[in-house]
Image 1 (cartoon, one colour):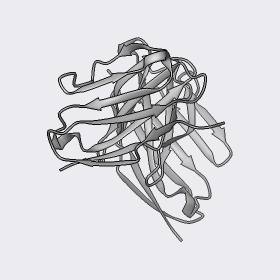
Image 2 (cartoon, chains in turn blue, orange):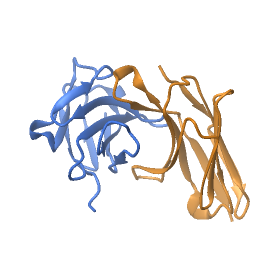
Image 3 (cartoon, helix red, strand yellow):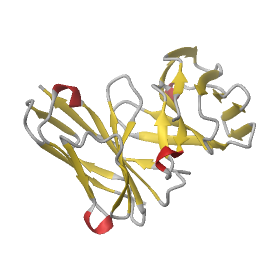
Image 4 (tube, one colour):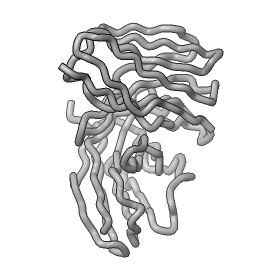
Length: 114
Length: 113
């Protein structure tokens, strides 16, 4: 079974530029999550989708971050404009349902803002 | 909401047992999880325990849950160098009604040969 795919693996941008990350969840998984993991910390949920609807985006900085999951499969996370403090690993995860009994994580995209 | 605390570092010798500890604040977490993260990799679910259980064993892994003290531990028997990684404890926050994982900061396990 293919895992959660994310791209790119690494990205370096200057502050105030924009960037987008892509995630392809495991086939058939209805729930998709984006997490932000700052160096030395645990992952923090940014947004959760159930199919193509947003379930929880309470911790998403909406002035600069946006995410969509058109057609309820792939998802993109965008940052515009980026700040230095956005440097982190962005992890995508998916699960069959919402009970979180097993969320599968991708390898992440490491973003460096300089 | 849920808050999860872990010690940051643990160093053991190969063949010894490792015990990684975690405390949480919200007793409403239905499940409590242990994830493993190797360098440059995503998180891998190691095991989870349902909140009405006290113990769960899975091969070399033993999870102990003390609900009264809100304390969770992960014991790795016969620790190997391949077990070197960061281990995250996670609870579930139902504030958003769907159950989002709330992670601790992670415990870095170093296994010396």
